[in-house]
Length: 116
Image (tube, rainbow, N blue to C red; front, side, top):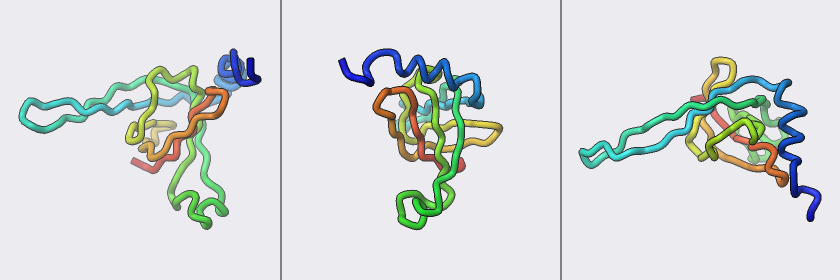
């Protein structure tokens, strides 16, 4: 049994969720419109998250683009598995997810986002 096996995600959830912001997660799916095209369908769920910006070093080195935001979500608070192009709203500001990373303990998702 490894250090990251077990209930680390639950411990992180219990420790930090009360301190984080409430967010609306918008899971985007395409469905057949019956006319040879597709329609975007959105399902909304809630989660706990915080926003951050990338350092000047990351932007200047090309690891992040100007205008990118980092959003960290506690995994136990988010039911659907996120996908690129899903969206998240925090404090009335909506962001589009452009990249997704997961920490080794599966406790948080880190999204790279841009204003939607």
